[in-house]
Length: 246
Image (cartoon, rainbow, N blue to C red; front, side, top):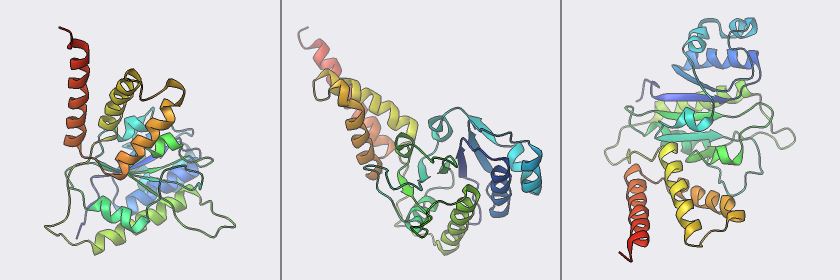
């Protein structure tokens, strides 16, 4: 059974409310989460309302790290789960929280993994959701599907604890390292340039088509060494095209 969540990072994108932020810090302290990452917070993390809600969890706020983009916040994470309350998320498939959290804790504790929560008013963009290998949503009655941010965090952390308690080490489990969001983004930048060059992509539709490719690779849980291999093939192909007449 996993007793530590030291490798799990909770990432909040542009949190708006001091009360919510304080509540989430307290929840992190309650559930043994030590690493809170804040992407361009829109509230003061050291506001009096934050302190009132956080109580002993204020240490989580004091130790939090800050980032300007979500990609920067998760670039070192080998597995990423994003939360989504919207139904209009295009080609990005939803995974059940139970399956996604089981998958998260199966990864090696030596490597960082992340659970990402979006903005209180509009959640995560489709581009941000594509930085995750798994996207989950907390089911609520259809007449009022929107959850308060801190409530959503509480539910997910509780489910994470249940998954951890039920987890049993199995030598057959797949605990390989997936490509990090940064590695995958760098590869896709190279691939986009190459596919534009050979005429497979057109500039005006390249973003939407590359988003489909990225979604496919995330669902396939592409590994770091596989991304490196394909990137090497692209580079060699570019070299051959540039030097074929030499």
